[in-house]
Length: 303
Image (tube, rainbow, N blue to C red):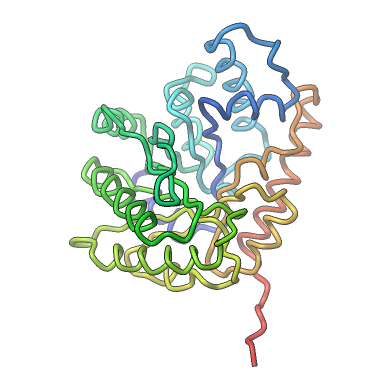
């Protein structure tokens, strides 16, 4: 796949994007969910070797292919790794899966009801290295906890600032202003986020486009204006703490949104499984998430 092929697949392909980018503090939790306890490693390097083995097992499983998984988000260490002497992005491309790279370095402390992204020193060099490896796009996450317009406006401004840098580096930015689904002000915060995103999209220069990775809205269909916006290549949904069944049910009520799930994709996979059991479990999860991304439930119109 060349860049044009990848753009077309992400823009209109049937399927979803797998989030395989757990990093830092989330890695031990991901390994524990996989059945690997913390006493299985004695150094950070060994921990990352174990998560790399898990990701390699997922990527090379027969059920993990571009027929239903149109993209995959990688952690930087995973991008730089090999599977059978082949760079991981090349392995994905060979399977028809478009590679993305997580570029954020974690979150600042909360202020004005939000957590901005930490500074990203060396981002231009990372973008250049990613592009050289065949990566199509990036993902960058910040978090909204409360319906504070000042904070949400700052989140959106930072996301689009980074997005413009990514575009200048020749990659497609996937902006992720995650809204905490446990927020006591969730519905109000979602409306503010929608308003701020639309203003930022309308202000994009030239023919620039971005992707958006958003929490599934409390009110189904709320993000339709983003899905229809000419400057948005695709809107994808994070599972946000929902178990897979609930995440899929919520996603199926939102037209045009496809999944970019992590925990909801991996929740049933265990280190102890045989390869056949592993692939069967992964295939079941893929089928569920694919269905929620492609088969939508009609939402009754209020009288």
